[in-house]
Length: 233
Image (cartoon, rainbow, N blue to C red; front, top):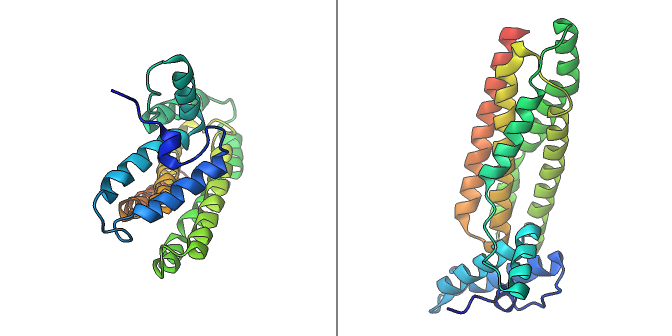
């Protein structure tokens, strides 16, 4: 069976830049979205468009796909979040080591890790509802959608800073539970941003609701981290 040519599906050149790929995907997703196109075949088209963007929108998967097109290899394997989580979990455990000065270590961890991570998480989690309310006025409006994408970019920036702070030093053993809550909270936020951004490409409200739910879970984990911290401090 002939393999799908994802570049043809999106109507772009194989040398297209990531920005051009994203632009083409967004245009086609809007064109064939069921709320905009009630004609036959729109659902099938959306499936093909999503599959193409899933590969070409990811630099690593696109590289594998391009290599397979040239050398006749197998289809690029789909990257998944489980591998990313496993890698992050392994890095986290590497930081869990003892220290000779527990009190000093705790003070430094509070200053360098706990407080900045909480600060950035608060900035991310506190504004989602307002941003979605603004977008709800017309999800297909390019300006509103652009504003929402800018919000997601800001969230990614805050998340990167929070992750950097979290990994900057090992946690003291007496706050292992706090660190675990923060670790899972950061993962939920990252996955939530991914879901919300996917909505901006295909206008499927499933991703919007899924992103909201992941943010809600993250907020709960942040509260649990705070409660656990009060028992220690």
